[in-house]
Amino acid sequence: MSADTPAAAPAAPQDPFRLVRSPEYLKLLVVAAILGVPVSAAAYGFLALVGELQSWTYTDLPEEIGFQRTPPWWPLPLLVVAGLLVGTTIRRLPGEGGHKPAEGLKATGVARPIDLPGIFIAALATLSLGAVLGPEAPLIALGGGLAAGALRLMKRNTPPNAVAVVGSAGSFAAISTLLGSPLLGAFLLMEASGLGGPLLGMVLVPGLLASGVGTLVFIGLDAWGGLGTYSLTLINVPPVSRPDTAEFGWALVIGVAAAVFGAGIHRLSLWLQARVELRTVPATVLMGLVVGGLAIAYAESSGKEAADVLYSGQDALNPLLAGRASYSVGVLVLLLACKGLAYCASLSSFRGGPIFPAMFLGGVGGIVLSHCPGLPVTYGFAMGIGAMSVAMLKLPMVSVLLATLLLGSPGLTVMPVVIVAVVVSYVVSLRLAPTPPGSPPPPPEAPEAPKAPKAPDRTT
Image 1: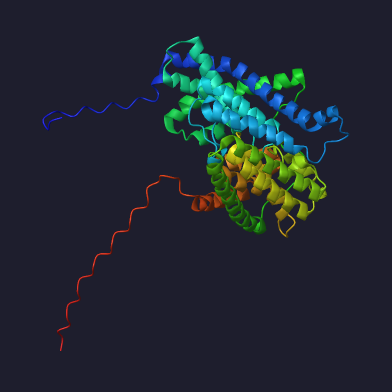
Image 2: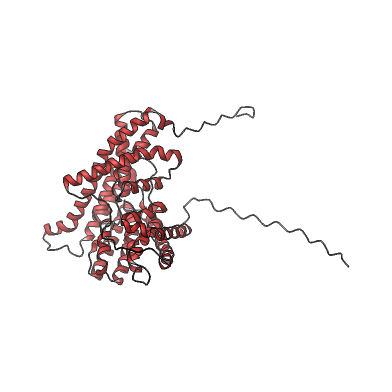
């Protein structure tokens, strides 16, 4: 191009409200509400299938084979099968089984239809056979992919903006009640996607509509089938009084401790992931054996169930809080160590979400610290959940809501100190986080300008 050639005029910025003001947006709202029904039903069916497979593989299958009770070594073959299925899916099917959980929870776009079978198989094997991950990330991907795929089938040449909006609505519908409230699921998707400004409102309205429809579908299917709501809602939470200076001091301690513990898990899982990817199938099987071995070691040492270490911990939060008196401090510390290491191995190789194991570890740590003076168990439990969640997710708003809204009325009382613990953990976690590969080095500091020579003193 010569110097006389005029530069191309920059494209005019797209009006973010253009789609909202158009008649097509109303049609998108209707489509989001309609698609919310089958997507929510599919999510409910997926969670029901996972629950049935967990019970069958761990409890019923040993009895059908001839064992009077589940043998201590039983987690090992389950996790070998899980490793084979997940590793083969990652290697052979498109999409690598979904996002890598060691890299955090991400909502970065709608999954392609060709990726959905691999995401489904990898998540089902991970969640059903004992790996320490949760269902939220696969549900987000599957819900968004199903909704966007259905829209493309309904109308060819659909604009990308419309596909993105409907795909987001499908994700909203899929996790509408998983975290105990459709609003909490909405906050999770908003913070994880990084949306803001007018674009947030454009996506949020169809998402909330689909989420409300999804909640009604979950409730209706539970009433019809009686399989459960699959909602994380804590009950029998010990009552609390207003926080004082001691609780605020403990918020600082818990925030720092969770950040250090979370940074260790994050670094170890990324280190393991880099080595697992060199030989995916055998390394994933090896990580499954590590998880199974940790569960067996915990069960044999403590006399408790190996299931305390296995799975995401989503269904174990209520029993943990209600039965905390049956766990000694030593058993809780052992559980914290074994579950944390199993979490690292699962993050590095399997496919699922990181939220529920982080919450479980934070709750265990809070109960351990509640044996110290000045820390009631509800405060320790809530602050541990919030601080550990933000250490692993880097989502401060969601972490505060996870630790408070799920406690019911006591959650409002403990919220101020939970906020302090979450903020402290978040700031310390960012300081401890490893530098992402490929990041440019910090610019060198400018050299200090030399000072002008001082004029000689000519006074006599």
